[in-house]
Every structure is written in structure tokens, then in C-alpha cells.
Length: 141
Image (cartoon, rainbow, N blue to C red; front, side, top):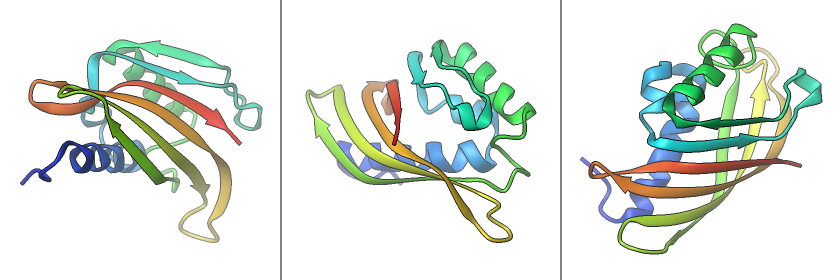
């Protein structure tokens, strides 16, 4: 059963994205994005990751596969994305803006360590009857 209002549906999608980044399939993860979504991440020198801009589900999926192959995230890496302080602004019947804080933990089965913190500036669109992420700009710090 879907939550009633757009803001709750969007919050649920944000939570699902975090869970799927850590434990789900790549296909289920990219289903949370619009077909033409844009995903922007700054460089992360601690993890040797260059700045990235991915456009469309195929490019976003390729980025997820790269991070999983490098052991940075995904099933078996014992990492967790946590999204909090979520502020949803529904701007029309089919669009919304969301600001949120993220934290990223590693070594979650032993002594969890905070590895990163930052913010998401997200845009959502109603596509095929579901609120999906259409643009994400990730900031560190």
C-alpha cells in the first residue's frame, strides 16, 4: 500500500534508494529514478572516486556497478547509507524538490565507522504513476 500524500511517497522512495544502494539489485535501484534522471557526485579523494555526472538509468546503473566492483558499496560490503533531515517541497502536481542530509557508514558488522556526510539536493517527478528521482546533486561535508 502506497503512503497517501506525495511527500510521504517521496520520503519512502528516498528510504528505498538508500536501502537498495546497500543491499538491493542494481535494477531495483535504478527503477527509483526517472528514465532521463541526472546524478551528480563530487570527487571523493578518500575513496579515489572522481567527480561524476550520470544521465539516464543506463549510465546511473553503470556507476553503481563500478562502485560495487570496487567494493565501495552494495551487498557484501557492510556499508549503510542513512538519509535524514528530509525536507520535501511539492512544487506542482508532478514535481517536487527535496533537501536531505546523508551519512555513510562502513564496517557495519564490526565497529561501524562514519565514512562521510553531506547533503542531497534532489528533484522528483511523477512518472508512470510513481514519484521517482529525476535529479540528484550530492554535496560532501
